[in-house]
Image (cartoon, rainbow, N blue to C red; front, side, top):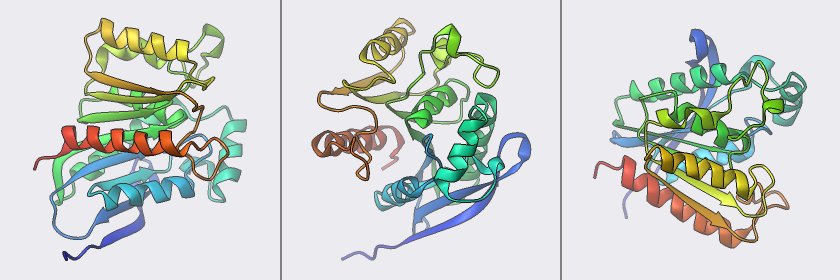
Length: 249
């Protein structure tokens, strides 16, 4: 039996424009080196599911950070803060990119990192994961889970989200894994087709997996959307993909 342990704690990092933001970090004990993961939380906020998922990645051998994209909206219960952010029209794409770069750079400064970092997000965090992967050269893999509004109509564009992420596809800097439910409405299967066509057009390295019988949020075991078989297969795809692109062993 080898000893197994983990450290999990809340820290402060420098986010966009060097503003301090909170982040939750979980990593295996020991000197590593460990591959790094950055988790972009979903629209419901920096919540328990993301805390648990941060520890899940640590359990699988990844040093993982989940930064609070809603930090500037104040303290409080995740769903209260999320409601406040929603009322304000969400967080600006540029700020999310800056905050996420801060999380990546925090990981890259740690002595136990193996030099490789991946990014993972679900729902709005899936969209932001793809967006970030098109605006940085600092990551080695991106995992987008049902990223809604990667494809946006002109009516959906606004000052905080001035450009649809799909427009940046040519700048995608790393391999991409996408998981989607065929019963989802955001993104719809047609939007996933568009997303995929653009990746093909620009010769990007990607793999998409689409699940019948699954809609939006099919990984969330605490919600009616949960689909156990599809979620278990999806997690296998996630860890297989990350092992391929982040492992140095």
